[in-house]
Length: 205
Image (cartoon, rainbow, N blue to C red; front, top):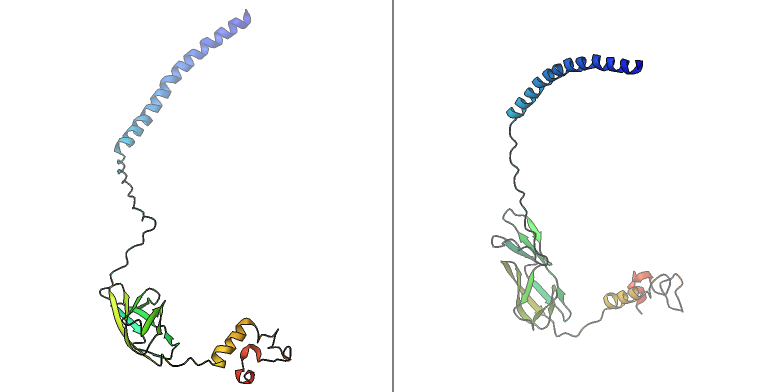
C-alpha cells in the first residue's frame, strides 16, 4: 500500500512539470520553422536541365568522304621518266601541295594510268618498260591530276646478267657467302668467297 501511494504521488508531481514544458518547446520551435519556410520561399528556382544530345555514330564499314582536293596541286617526282633497258622500272613520289605551301605524301594513295601499256605498263606502284617509244603517265589523287612524260629505250636489248648485281646478292641471300659456309675465313669444301660478297671482284673467276 505504501509503495502504491508513493508511485501515485510521483505521477501527480510529474504531470504538471511536463504540461508546463510542452508550451515552451512549442514556442521555441515555431520561429525556427517559420524562418526555414521563409528561406525556402526566397531560394531561387533551379534551371531546367538541358536534354542530352546524342551524336549519330558512323555506320560500320563506311569511311568518311575525303575532303575536296579541287584547290590542291599534285606534285610528282621526277617530272619526267626515262626507262633504259628491258628490265628497267621506276617508282616515283607524289605529294599533295596545299594552298599554304605545306605538302602531304600521297604516293601510296594515287591512281596510275599509262596511255600506252605496250610501251610503259603499270605494275603495282611501278612503271615498267615493255617496248621502245613514248607514253604519258597519268597520276590522280581525288580531283588533283598530273601527267608525266615517259620514254622507253633499249627494251629489246638482250638481258645482260651481272655477277655483281645478280649473282652475288643471290649467294648472300641463300647463305652461301655467310660465315658458316663459303664466307668463312678458310672457306668450305675448297671454295672460298668473300663474306657476304663484300669483294665480288675476288669471287668472280
